Every structure is written in C-alpha cells, then in structure tokens.
Image (cartoon, rainbow, N blue to C red; front, side, top):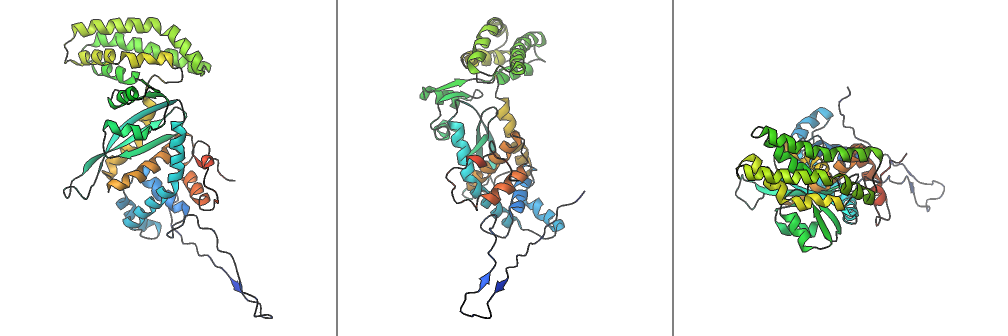
Length: 372
C-alpha cells in the first residue's frame, strides 16, 4: 500500500546568450504548457481533489486534515477554489453532453433534494435545493442544479426536446408533456411495483399475485435483451403481442382489489397508483426504445445521496452548479467504464492546449479515449 504523496515539480528554463555577438537576442527554453490555467495545482491534483469529494464523498475539511499526511497542508479554501476551477474547465463538455441528450428521442428524468447554505437566510440554517437529472440507457448522465422543484423548472431543463420522457409520478412531468405535444410521457413500472411490495405485510396473497404478473413483463424484457432485440419497432410489436393478456389480467385484478381494500390502506394506495397511471404505464407498448422502469437514472443519483450524508449541504446556492457539472462528468465516466481520475487528468491537460474548443464531442465521456 503506497499512501498519496504530494510533490513539487520545479521547471528549469536555461537562458543562453551568444558571447560572440551580443546583439543577438538571448535564447530561453520555452515554457511548458500548463495543464490548467490558474493556481499551482497540476491536472492530477485537481482531479484527485474533485474525485475525493464527488466520488469518495469526503468533505473538504477532512481532505485538509488528510493533506498533512501527503506532504503539505492544503487549506479548504484553496481546494474549494480548485473545485470551482475544475468545474469551469469542464462546463463546455457538460453543455455538450446536455445538448446531445436533448437531441435524442428518449430521456429518463428524476430529481433529488440537497440542502444548501444561503447567506441571505437566517444564520446557521439551510434551505432546500434540487439536483434534476436526465439521462438515457447507454447514454451520459446530466445533473442540473435548481433552487426549487416547481413545475416551471422543467421547460428550461428540457428546452428543445422532442420524444419520450420517462419519470416517476411527480406531476411536473405529465404537466410538461401536456404543454408540449411533441413530448410523450411514459411511467415507471418499478414505482408501481414498489407500492405493492410495501403492501405485502398487509395483504400477502393479493400483492403476491400482482407482483407475479408484473414480474412476467420483466421476464419478457429480459428475454428480448438476451436475444438482442433492440430495434424499437420490433420491440414495440413484441410488447403489444406478449403483454396484452398479462396487462388485461393485471388491470382487472387491480380494479377488484381496489373495491375490496380500504382507500387509505397500503393496498388501496397501490391500486390507486397503478390504475391512476395506467395510461403512461401502458404507453410502453407504443415505444420500443423505452425501459419499463426508471431505475437507471435513480442509480445515477445514488452517489449524490451518499455524498450529502457526508458533507451535509452545499456551501452556497451558486456552488450547486459546480456540483452538478462534476457529478455529471464522473457518473457518466463510471457508466462507460472509464477511470474518472484518468479521464479528468487527461481532459484537464488537453483542454488548455486546444486552439479550437468549438467541438468537444471527442472529450465527452461517451467518446473519450485516452491519449497514448
């Protein structure tokens, strides 16, 4: 086990002068290109600090204490400035990722609360903030920081999107789809299933039958995945053929159980959710590119959920954007199997040396390849 170690790189630039002819200008070795403009931290150190907070979920004050064992004490304020600098350099790539997602025909969306400290609020208190997340299977993940969960946050987040939008039952998503005819909203079967799973202790026999019917849908999906049936039109035809009988039984069973169950019981609420969202849940039959549930985007949110348990809150409302940018990069790297540290160190080294930064598609996590 080799612990981390800080080291200082000294760059010596010899300066020469021709003795025979003093009129000739002196010669000096050219200065090496800095990995990132500003400060004395290398790309590797910037990547290490960013990943320690957003992948290993370490608060900066802990990193300050740990840095004494690395060879030099680095203050929290300095590391905070480095995180800000890292997010600024990554922002053009982040914007490119966002544009590519909006250009697709299928998105999964979700949101998660994160507290933030607002200096305008009462001292010692925090206010709620939100990380909105959009993604697609086998695609990148983009986080977006907002101070509210209001319905009017979605139009700016999804501006220009035309296609299928999948989410849980939060009312903002169907309202957005209703206001934008080019968007179709589909539901999440995992949320419908989860409510019946929670009602098992209350009504074991009834919920067991419902769960078996939902499991039958997932078994068909797994078979088609294993057989390589990924073409949307073919998948939609298979769903219409194979799901019809199961969905008919499921709908009839849910209606019967709702008539027998108490409205405020767990079983009654589960039936109300399933029947109330029946149209978006069965809309998957017409769109073969969708997944039955929203689990992939929920899994992408988990790192932020672990992080906020450790560093508790975002230090300032304006700092939420940098968290959204870095989370988008590192979570997307993990989804594509890239080492986030290798990616950040390489990209933070290459970006300042690029003369043309108009097209950064090659540096997005989906297209990135390390330079040999």
